Amino acid sequence: MSEQTPPESDAAAHAPVPTAPVDGDDDAAREASLRAGLADYELQDEDLALLDGGEGGEVPAGPAGPLPVLAVVGRPNVGKSTLVNRILGRREAVVEDKPGVTRDRVSYEAEWSGRRFTLVDTGGWEVDVAGIHARVAEQAEVAIALADVVLFVVDATVGATSTDEQVVRLLRKAGKPVVLAANKVDGPRAEADAAALWNLGLGEPHPVSALHGRGTGDLLDTAVSGLPEVSAAGGAIREGGPRRVALVGRPNVGKSSLLNKILGEDRVVVDAEAGTTRDPVDELVELGGKRWWFIDTAGIRRRVHQTSGADFYASLRTQAAIEKAEVGVVLVDASVKMTEQDTRVISQVVEAGRALVIAYNKWDLMDEDRRPFLEREIEQDLVQVQWAPRVNVSAQTGWHTNRLVPAIEKSLASWDTRIPTGRLNAFLGELVAAHPHPLRGGKQPRILFATQADTRPPRFVIFATGFLEAGYRRFIERRLRETFGFEGSPISISVRVREKRRR
Image 1 (cartoon, rainbow, N blue to C red):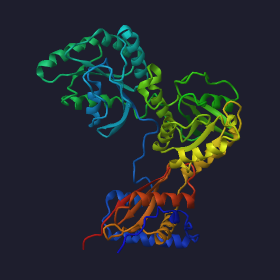
Image 2: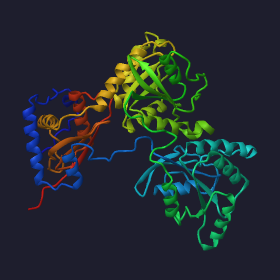
Image 3: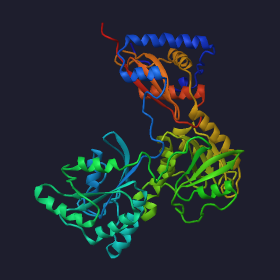
């Protein structure tokens, strides 16, 4: 038998969209029947929790704000990146036997003893020997300000240097919890060198070897025990009240100008120089007859190592702002071609699971003859997020800013949407009947049952007899959007393959 064509063809794409039955009794009967059929399959405890609870069975609830931040600081070439890789359990940070090695990423999500946190590697210092004190002070001060706990790494074989002592003064001034790591202690002989670091006045030095892993477990136990539940730098998520909107985008696209225009006053500093905004600014805004929390964020740079000092860490603050928000409004400059940075910003909002609105700024400056070509370019640029509402605005004049609220409300409504289980299974039943999964190896996976595990963003779990290909999952997602909306919200579909019970 020949294989069936996957439902990614034009014919499938334009086929009539199946609609779920309107009769609630039919939906309930279908749900009960399919749910009973699952009794014949091997289900795990997490499956039963999901099915019995109806929601929240897939992923435990996260913290009420950005993850706490553990910053690894210290002068160059003391082994910070090696320690970061050891903590992560994988090679992420670039490691070379020379100081000042740059890297694209400086923050990573890590876990230790069941505690999740953001690990910040400050190893990308560009050391200017002539002005080393000014450079170290600038970098270390910002890193310390953002951290909830500071992991201060010193080379025990060298001992405390004048640079180390300068950082110690900054640590004392900041008043943040500090854990002192005496690195490169590879054996008992070097422990005496570690003990000498008591003189820094930061408490007990923890002798470790980032290269070999010696002592890193005890070090992490101490560091993690001092972390709060929610990062003090990002702040707790506001519960209830006005919805939370993060204004994000690459530097100098007009985020601060847009917020000022909405507010009707110059609340945020605006300058032609990119990157004026350093700290996210929470502002209660009256817009469209409703109140909103707007967060004006620093411009996200794709390669954060290309900036220095406070700008180097602005992207970390922006990520925290996205995590605090419910919807991200990504501002794009319509006067220039969309850049890789713009795409990366959009991806950050989607990956964070937030609702999305894309606003093209400076649209009023576009020539009438240029606009049709720009529309086609936008369709190509946003092919992966065609589901996101788009608004053309002018931050300078306020043109069409009144269209932001309907777009934001539409995205948030989709973000909150829950499909009744019976209706969801009726929809899938008709969809699979019209477009069955292609045969693979002579077998055809069968969808047994589906449920919506959560909202904000909507997450769907499908129980099936075999793996569903990525193309078929995308097909299901596209039809879900066509049938139920979900405009402006990312959705995820996961598949749990379950086998029949052995008699």
